[in-house]
Image (cartoon, rainbow, N blue to C red; front, side, top):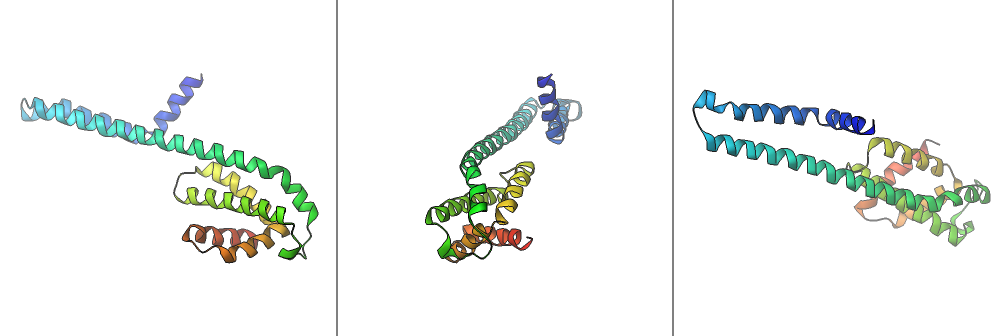
Length: 179
């Protein structure tokens, strides 16, 4: 059953590429009917089409593996922050300055923001699937509500000077502003 479902998803995901490959292969097979016996042209065309088709499937496989690796790494790193959320939520109130935040908690929140930055970076590069991103974004919205996270974010953002952080700064500010 699982195999048929996986096959169906594969076919759905690649229906255009498979259709194009099949049509092109059929064209090269029927070349002798139109142009005479051009075996070298047939063989070259079939080889080229098959190489491009298999290259595309390999590209998809590499992208899927990269997503899997990123997904696993990010989720493992996030698990470390999971236990800290409730404690940070309970320990800090709204009228907070950066001086009142425990340095250990600052480090935890900076590490969390760096994780979010990496997730955002890879999402913008198209390496994170939309469904995974929506889940992670929901988590970011939850953390962005915490006064301590807001305080640490606005303190840290003044030190972020590379373009790597620029898009994330704007994005995370929008999460904070929607609170």
